[in-house]
Length: 68
View (cartoon, rainbow, N blue to C red):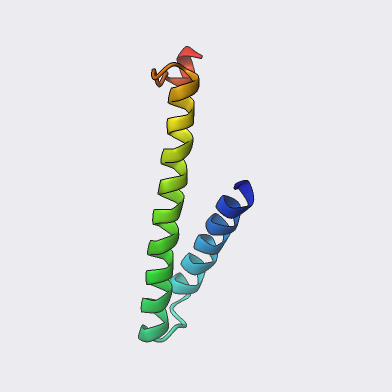
C-alpha cells in the first residue's frame, strides 16, 4: 500500500513538472490533467482510509498530534 501511495505521489509530481514546462500540446496537457485528477482522488481516498484506522485505534477520537 505504501508503494502505491508513493508511486501515485511521484507520478503526480512528474505530471506537474510536465504541465508546468509548457512544452505539451493542449491535448497532452488535458490527458495529464485528467490522470492527475485521478491520482489526487486516489491519494485522498488512501488518506481517508488511514485517518479512519487512526480513529479506530484511538477509540474513535482523532487527536491532534500535539496531544499525543
